[in-house]
Amino acid sequence: MSVESLGAGGETGLRRVPPDDAAFLAALGEVGMPRDDLGASHGVYFALVDDSGAPLGYCGYEPLENGLALIRSCVVPHANRGKGAGRAMMVALIDLLAGEGMRELYLLTMDADPFFAKFGFETIARDEAPDVVRASTQFTMECCNDAVLMRRGL
Image 1 (cartoon, one colour):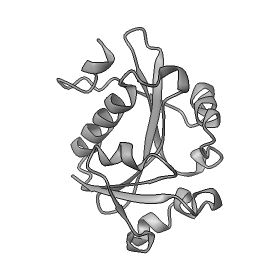
Image 2 (cartoon, helix red, strand yellow):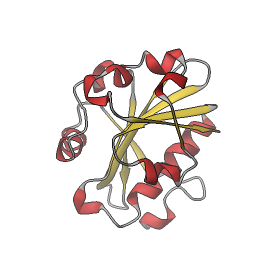
Image 3 (cartoon, one colour):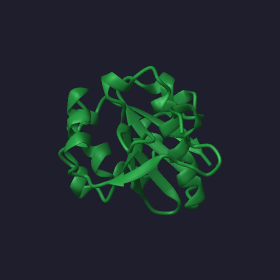
């Protein structure tokens, strides 16, 4: 299975990882993304893996109320960038969440809004976020105060 085929034909390429997975935490640390709250956030996290099971990137989400989810902690380590891993990971995660009955996805990003826009996410004002999104651990973290909030319907 190539990176380009991940997410096609029912094959997601996602393998669940615990929030304290060392490689996941290292990948987040490499790019300065928050990681201190992962265990407390009720998040579900995944590694996008290749044929050998080697992780290419990581992503996760917090299931919220009323069919809402907060996508978070999406990262592709520098060594794996430019190979389609980010695209494959987002396609697989969106497909997974749609299959779980989510109806709206939210995310916060410091600088990847052009990337997420390719998947139908639109920038919205932070005060337009539903209360359940505003109450999430990530939304209230000081390091995310200046992050762009994005939304996508399913």
